[in-house]
Length: 219
Image (cartoon, rainbow, N blue to C red; front, side, top):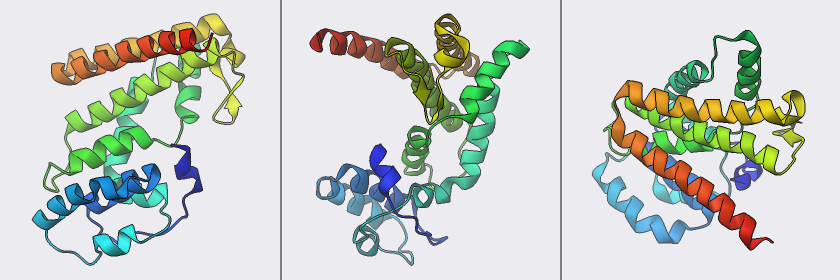
C-alpha cells in the first residue's frame, strides 16, 4: 500500500504485542479502524496486559512500516533466507536476473501481513517453516505478476530501477516470470503443504482472470 510510504518513523517498545501492531498496520493504512476495533479488543482481552495500550497506539496519527515489522525481525530474516533460495537458478546467466529481482523488491508488506496474522494464533511461539513458506509463496506470486505486468504495460522502470524486460528483453522477462511461478508449485509440492498450494493456485487463477477483465473494461 502506497500509504505506508507516508507513515512517520517511530520506535516501538520491545513489549509491543503483535496484535496491536497488526491492528495499526491494517487500520491506519486502510482507514478502517472503527470496523475492526471490536475484533481487536476481543483478542487483546485474551492476551496479558502489557506496557502499551490499544488506546495510545490507535491515537497515533502515523506509524512506520519499520515499527510494524520490528517484532518480526528474526522471523523476517528466516523468510529472507527462504526467498533467496527460492529465487535461484543453477544457470549463472539466469541467476543474475533472479538476483536482480531479489535485490530490487518492494517493501515486503505481503509477507509481513502473513506473519502478523500467523502471530495471532501461535501463542508467541517461533514460526515454523510453514509460515515462511506461505509468506514466500505470496511474495513470489506478487513478484511474478510484476514481471509480467511490466511486459504488458511496456513499463521501463520498477521500484526505481530498470524493469526486467528493459534489461533482458520481453522474451526473457516472460520466461523469468514463468520460472518464478513454477518455483511456487515446486516449493509447495516439495513441502507437502497442499492446502497452502491450493490457496496459492486459486490466487494465481484470480489474478489472471482479473487482468483479462480489467483489459476488457478499459477498452
